[in-house]
Image 1 (tube, helix red, strand yellow):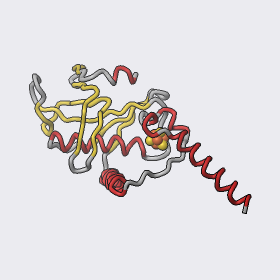
Image 2: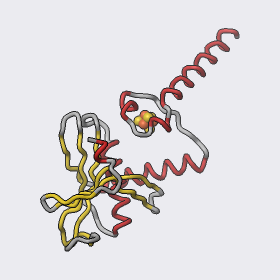
Image 3: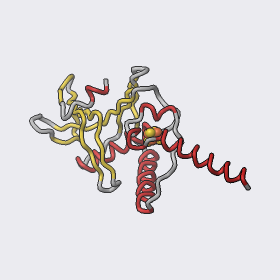
Image 4: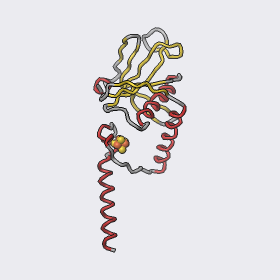
Length: 177
Ligand code: SF4
């Protein structure tokens, strides 16, 4: 599933929907960049012109997840950040996006609300604040780290071990006092 979503710049048209895969995105306002698994374009008067296509098309990001729906808002926030990047790049308003869960084979429509957008802005601000202070927040490894695409950069297990090591040293010092 994910392999196909990662085919660079693959596009196809099916049932009136133009599908673009592995789409590079960026927002100067948010200071974010990344790659959308899939962007679907459907005919709409509120959309944009696409190369070699007649009419106007409205974009909607589709994010593929291996697992099932989560109880937090992390997937929705990621999807909303993608939509906000696309909005800035294409100068359009994107009201919704989709999350596809491989484990349940379930596609969920996500309304990109003001609350979700505010959360994305707050998180981007927080991230830039950490960066400018040179501060790396400690992470607590959890089950989701195993399927996270950033795991190779984040190295959560190493951080977990580092925390265990520091706890161990603290314990040893306290014991010798
Ligand atoms: S690997 Fe890092 S970025 Fe990914 S979920 Fe775990 S803590 Fe978060």
